[in-house]
Length: 133
View 1: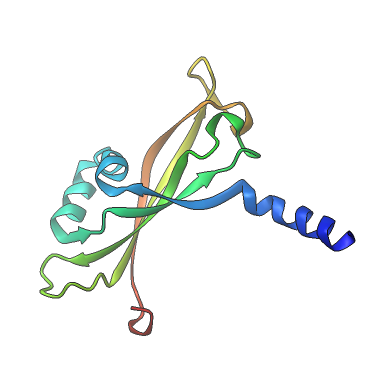
View 2: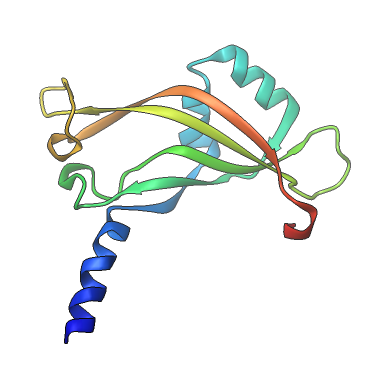
């Protein structure tokens, strides 16, 4: 019985944030377009998979945002100039999250939030090691 209780207690933080997927076209491009200069460079240079890994907000963090997705967004990409079909890079789109309460005002506590707004913050581009492809 103690082991079960310990497992439950240790798993609670894991339920707060987890990974989920969003669409590159529908969910990430609007965020990129907040900074058109960077959006143009990224979209002209890379081809992206449409499935993007994002953070899922858990009910324990914010009942009003439970299961919503937020950045950072991680997506597989490849250079458009490459002739192959291997997606050999990971592009991370970092965002600043603003939690909004019922009246639309920003709140410090995600617990009181019912909506979120994200601002495009930065990007990271990393090659995937050959042995991991």
